[in-house]
Length: 108
Length: 113
Image (spheres, each protein chain N blue to C red):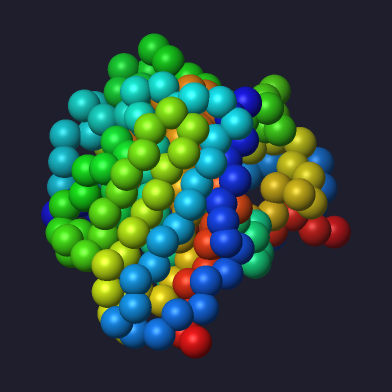
């Protein structure tokens, strides 16, 4: 099983600031099958990034993904008020399709 | 518009059974792989099961193997999760997801005596 570790656990930032979220895998993620999701309270997850760096439909370009192998990064270039949420990474290259524990981005 | 609507959740005693359903619309259901993902109260996301479009390939997380069965009826545009021998740790909101790109609103399963 591929274990995903996300850091930091919580990121306290102000609107307009840059957010950098990390996801590290215990083994190489095949085919860069790495996704990022945003989840707000009471809502289901929303796909942001797939294939490590491809933005999903309708996702603003302030969200970008990078990385390969075992190290991946989600960057939000300038935080908007609606971006404060929990972010999860997930590998879907090999079953079980594991999720990381999440990074909460909250308002400083 | 893609729509996924889960149903069938509720309160069940430990050892009991439930069958979750996910009604799909707005896309060609048989062309897409589907998944169940759950989220225990206040916790993170946990992938549960996957089924390919033709039902030829099925995967489960180890914690539900032998207890849960995923299936689909492409003629009815529906995905199912039969859950048997339920445990307290199965308590969660269960989401169906199309290729992880589209998600339903979830249905709550509570396992408690």
